[in-house]
Image (tube, rainbow, N blue to C red; front, side, top):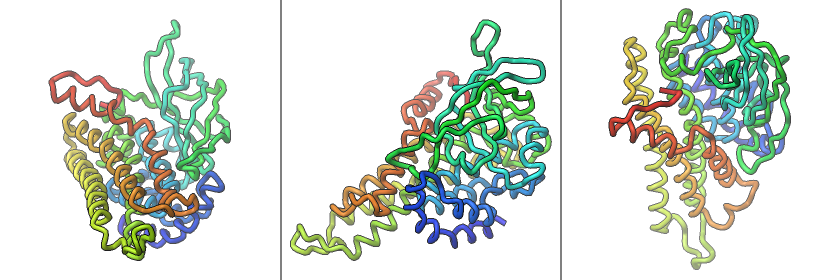
Length: 388
C-alpha cells in the first residue's frame, strides 16, 4: 500500500508547488492540498490498522514527507506533523483512540508539546489549563496533543504528560505572521480549566521506555519505535525535502543561467558553482542516508521485539539534529551561489531558504542540547532526558 500512496503523492507535487505562494498568503496550507493528501492516503500511513490505517514502515512515511516538502516547505512541514500524530495517539489508552478515530478514521490532530500547561489531579483525571505556541496545521485538525506538567499539592511538578483534547476544549488564537514557514498556520492554543480524563493523558516516562498502554491493541512494530526518534525525524524529513527542492531548482537554473557581471560567462562552466553543487548534494545525501540507516536499524529491533539500545537511540538523535543542519547548510550554499535574482521574495528558492531557517529553530533542532547527550553517553555519564 505504501508504494501506491507514494505514487499518488508524487502525482500531487506540481499542484502543491503551484499552491506554495497561496499557502504563504493564507498563512496556512490551502484546504485543497490537505484534502488531496487525505485522499491519497498519506495521513493514514502511521495510523493503527484497527482504525483504517496502514501502519507503514516509517521510512515510507518520511519519503512521502520529503517529496511533499520538495514542492512546498510549509505543506511538507504540516503534512509531517499531522501525519505523525496518529502514531502517537496509537500509544494512548484504547479508550482515547476510540474517541479520536472511532467515528471518523480521517480525524486529524495537531500538537504543541512544550510543557507550558499545568494539570491538577482530580477524581478520574485532571483539571488542565495553559497557553501553547506553534501548533502547526491546527486549522485543519479537530483534536490537539498538548504538553503539561502535573502539579502536586505543594505546587511542584511530579510528571510530564501529553494531554489529548477535542476542539471543544480549546481555542485557536490566530497569531501566525512569520518570515518562514508562513503557510503552516502554527497558531497558539488556549485552554482554560478543562477536565481531561486520565485515559486521554500519556506520561513521557512511558514513551521514553517504549512501554505504552496503546501497545495492547496495537502490537505491531510501528508502535514499538521510540518517540525520541520518530518525532524528531518528522521535523528533519521536511527540511531534507526543502533542501531537495532547492537543489533541483538551483541545478536547473544554473544550466540556463548567464552571469552578466562576469562578461556573459555561463554558470554551467563556473568551477566554483560546480563545487557548491557537489557539496550541497553530499550534505543532502548524507542527511537522508543517516535517516535511512537509523530508522532501518531501529525497525529491525521493533520487528524482532527486542529492546532498542540506548546507543542506537542516541545515535539517531545525533544524526537527526545534524541532518537538519546539513539540509540547512545545503540550502545556504545554493542560495549564495544563485545570484541577485535569488532575493526575489516570490521565487521558490528564497521561499525554501526562509522555510528552512524557520524550521531550524524548532526545539528538536537545538544541536548543542542534543549532542551533549551523545557525548555524555560516550564518556560513560548517565543520560537523564525525558526521551530516553
